[in-house]
Length: 115
Length: 112
Image (cartoon, rainbow over all chains, first blue to last red; front, side, top):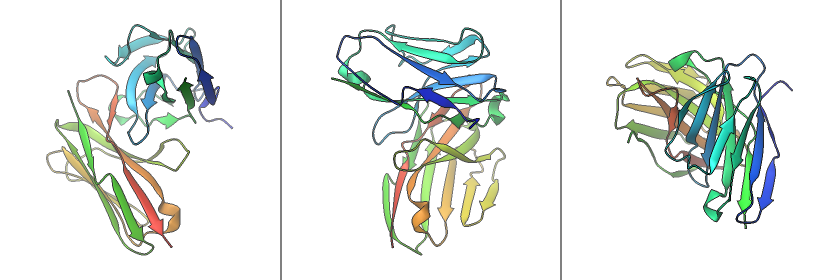
């Protein structure tokens, strides 16, 4: 399968713990996006990378959240000192990077539950 | 901030009936994209509309982009149980970077 993959698929953690998620995009894609989706809502943009450069971050992304894409391939999203409000599905998407004509391909997501 | 609103939130139809979901933006969009998310799944790209007034069809699905590039609709003719899922519109805001702004989605259920 050459689609976008995400690991883990599910994560249960206690409040205050740190968690890290990984996304492996489609190999030839330059852009990688992170979104958060809660029940009954559409995906909310968090941040995106063009190759290894992080080009934009949402104001939703507090200083407890950090994302990296060190070699322009896979990306990690870390949440420090998790809170119950962080419980959500975290989606990764990738694209060729054709600007406004981009088509984004989503991964299966990581479902985070903070107890 | 920029918002993309979608109505209705839920739609329950009998198999064979038609279905329409509407999307409105507070800001002119560069383009609009539509995604489908099956229960328990992830969003899957359906189509992209770029030109003012553009209409595109995919079998029983018809997508429209408004003349002012602020609204869009998805119409499904003669729904089938395989159409079940949540349909999201997502707008690309010109000069606002590389992000898509998603609507809240319309959840479609189809009763056989």
